[in-house]
Amino acid sequence: MGQKKFANGFILGMALTLAVGGAGMKVYDVVEDRQNSKNAVNDESMEKAKLIEEIIDEKYTGEVDKELMEADMYKGMMVSLGDPYSAYYTAEEYEELNTETTGSYKGIGVVMQMQMDTGAVKIVRCYEGAPGEKAGLLPEDILLQVHGEKVSGLELSEVVDKVKASEGEVAHLTVARDGEDDYLEFDVPLEEVNIPVVDHEMLEDNIGYISLYEFTEQTEPQYLEAFEELQSQGMERLIIDVRNNPGGLLTSVCGILNDMLPEGLIVYTEDKDGKKEEINSDGKSELEIPLAVLVNGNSASASEIFAGAIQDYEIGTIVGTTTFGKGIVQSVIPLSDGSAVKTTTAKYYTPKGRCIHGTGITPDVEVELTEGLEQKTSITHEEDNQLQKAIVVVKGISK
Image (cartoon, rainbow, N blue to C red):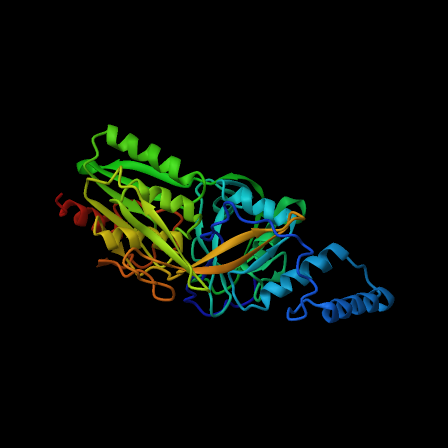
């Protein structure tokens, strides 16, 4: 614990869970187009790679993991793009990725995001009752090391892999915490974690409150269940909370918006060739009660699609602070050997044609969370000044 912590004030960056659109995606053959001389991977580069491997086999004195060597070669291609959202997944990593978007996985039960400029990895949510919270991790902690190895310079997916690959299924983490002079160290067991993607309750004055933690395959059905339960209790107004929601599946957020918006455009994407794809609402279940949506700087990707559509259609009031500003979409493209490539394939635009990449969604009512509350794993409704403002706002909306 003797090391000094580095500068405070890291802002979030990349969310681990990203807006993807992989349904019906072509599975690419791993040997397709290798001989195209215009590509980086051509006969000459293949021969050079073989030569380097031969030198390693003949000269290197240590053990060689050929599977790891091959995987890192492919990962290097994606890293060379300079895009923090692009990555190569081995078959095992791809299987884990698919598991995570279903709402259940083996891990420590925290959500991490990466700061774009510095590469610092920040914990933005510790799920209640999960191993991370039990061990003492807090939101706003900056992850510095996993098992004594620095994580700076790694992709977020690589950091997560290091945590999950912990020997003895216990992750030894070193973090920097605001207000602490020394680094803190934690041993966190890896356990099966069922991600609570939706939470809800009835507040006073028949105001329904629904918190959406991530947009996974389970989010839409859990949202509908929560909404119907609140309706049965006499809900007259609604607050939806997407603060600290890093995003998730495009299909998930659009499914929920389809249950709220009038008939029309939800979001559209545009790829590098200018090809547009639109996702529309059928307008069959338009929300008919006053709505407020809570956002903050950790609301990213699919959360911003959600807030942007609500704001453009003016069916609710956005309350909080400016969102992260991730207005691009990643597609996960499976390969025939079970591995996959994730890369940025399009920009997305709100119904009114706004591209919020790099700027975020500016709330209709700006409210900073009271200083010191960001580091708490949970805060009461009474001390949550952003929620209290949303209550005042939604009470003032008439429909």
